[in-house]
Amino acid sequence: MAGENKDASRSVAAIVGLVLGILAVVLSWMPIINNFAFVLGGIGLVFAVVGMVGVVRGKKAGKALAIAALVVNIASLAVVLGTQSMYSSALDDAANGPDVTATDAAQAAGDDADRGDAADTDAVSTQDLGVGSSVTFEDGVTLTLDSVEPGLTNYDGSPVIGIHVTYVNNGDAEFDYNSYNWKGRDAQGAATDPVYYSEAVDELSYGTLAAGGTVSGSVYFEGDSVSALYYASIIADSPAASWTIA
Image (cartoon, rainbow, N blue to C red; front, side):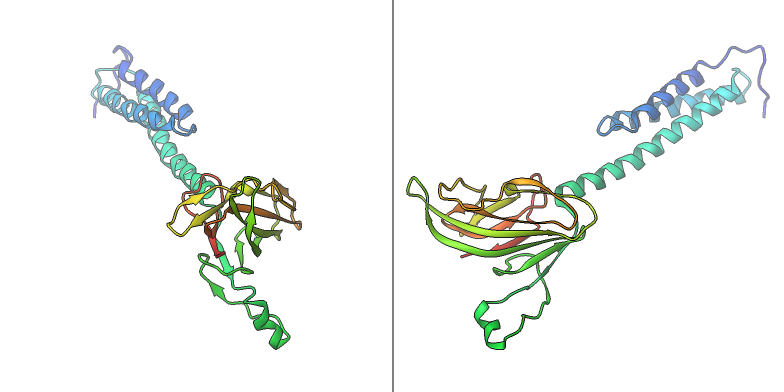
């Protein structure tokens, strides 16, 4: 292996590779932009290799520079891959929320009255739950659809159906709730946002529930809704839980 030629000019390829690598490292932490950082890191790595080859053959000077360019560009590529995985996981959590389980917390009240004790709770699907059933998220929040109020009439004569829900925050962190996390779905499968109801009582709005806190309220949908859908976030593409309400 040839040594470094002290009289040779410094490797321009190594310099370019180092500059591109530094830029790639800086940009690699930024969501979306880090896709461009990956390209920069790849190009920088090519320049770094070219620079290293020139130094090893004794045609160029700057071995330390070429090594630094190699290390920086390889590091930038690794950081991009790591941050993209991290951001992807964070976006998935934001969209779909934490894992959720359901308990069939209460069958029809009449069934339990005969027995004089509470209904047993069993793990069930989080979809098409019955009224009175609860879902518990892995962050400790329990959400129950307490009751349904069908046959309501709005100020303009349109039919409305209402649900009453309760959030209990048994977790360690605050929890954001919003009536627009709810949708009503009709028999044809179309889901719509909550509607304004002129005679609303105890209507659920939005806010932050402290650890250990409880909040209840009513949400109203178009009168032909047969299911109430709960989305873990307003950008989620599928409901975390649903209840049959008609």
